[in-house]
Length: 300
Image (cartoon, rainbow, N blue to C red):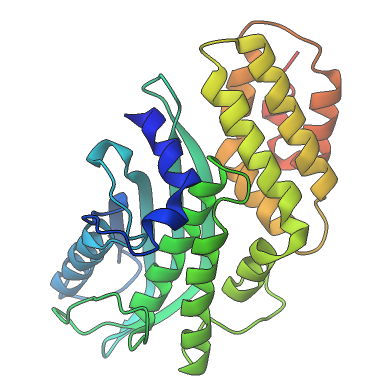
């Protein structure tokens, strides 16, 4: 069934153009709300927040596509609450998504997103509902934005620039959140902010990065069981695309998202056989992601 998923992404616009199909959910989400830093005797509100967010992400059809349960995108979300008062929350958010690899039981980590400044109001038991025409809740806006970004990144691995439609869905949320004056949606000089990140993903500059995502997964990992040597060569080619994309300015954010998720996988991929010349690869990796130098030193 996982092979069929590629067809879904290649023709996602067709499915969304008005055909009569039944919709199903996009995610298999595991969500943890950590309020250990908050001095609060009533912990039920945090438990209910966790439960409602899990239901929102797992029961909402963001893409409108018909998806098998086995085809849903696996994501882990960690919401770390730093301050809470009168239904107002301050937190940091970390999201990791993964992608199944063709003809294997392996799920490859795809992206690791870290949003250090998340502010929202939450009234216990108030329904969290997706409405693409208006956004009344910053909490819904934040999680809808990331839902579409994750769907888009996933789609980019199955078809070159296949996620463009979903990035524009995220852009719609961004516009509504900014119009409402919600916190956390302004362009600033911080290392990560939502508008900067999305603007980059929608720019022509990102096409090299998206080419890397496609080559790495479709021609690399998805073919590893069939022809591991050539599949490794395709992964090396994908990393060369990332090097051409560059690791300066705003580009650094996307490169970090990639290597935060992929560093361990790349190490394990090239430590194992079949062997090939990895001298150029190691130099590229050291230049692109020096923080993972201990991983790259293991590649011979």
